[in-house]
Length: 251
Image (cartoon, rainbow, N blue to C red; front, side):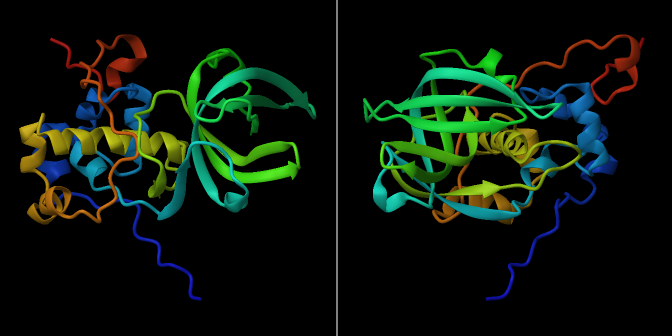
């Protein structure tokens, strides 16, 4: 079986970065979670506006099964489950590395415990509280007859409900120190703005074929966790941030 062809990282919009003031990366700060530093990284990677981010090409599509709880027939497959956090533990191994170990109970399968270990993410011990409901995905494993675990887990604290069953999850390549999961969330925000038409100027800068595919093609991968929040107003920059893409021009 031949290896899949990887698409180019970004498909830009002709003239979008040269003829519009937004091409300097300033409008990227309208997205939730994007500040001056992250906007500068995206600009360095070739993403200068929202249109370029909307046309970001996934590296591949990963088959994922949304389940209510772990099952024997799904061992070894990528699954996603909504669960309640039972406990959070932080442990250190080696000199500088640490991990966060979570014990989770699927909300639709009370009494079942799923373990997930996040290497190098000790901050989860502070940001994830006991009894919080989260969505966790990973490769389902069964180390022993009484234990379930998720390998290479991915955690979502803010998520939208979705029906159980198979789905396709876009997987993006890391860009400029930006994790694939965080990049996917930014793309989801832009695609949600395109689909709802809340930014007419953005739709005018996108190719007609792309808009037709978004509105009429049922096989197109949809965002797995669409953003429901409103785009925020860029914060006023001061000091070092004055030279960043998000900074407002001085009067």
